[in-house]
Length: 88
Image (tube, rainbow, N blue to C red; front, side):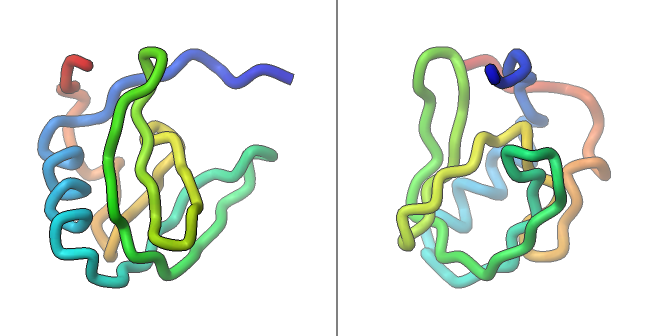
């Protein structure tokens, strides 16, 4: 089963993720897992990167999450940001 096409996220939310990766502080991350179900984990973010036209965050635990599957990070909902996107 292939994933749907990547949809870039809002630049301001992307910057928030980069800030968390810089500080490596543990934050609550909510996202849709591969089955499309909401999942929550407390993670220490270490990197935000692009690969093959998609963007991901990587946690210290090794967990990798595609950015357009995120719901919220540290209580800040992606849905609360306008549809403006960042170019890869």
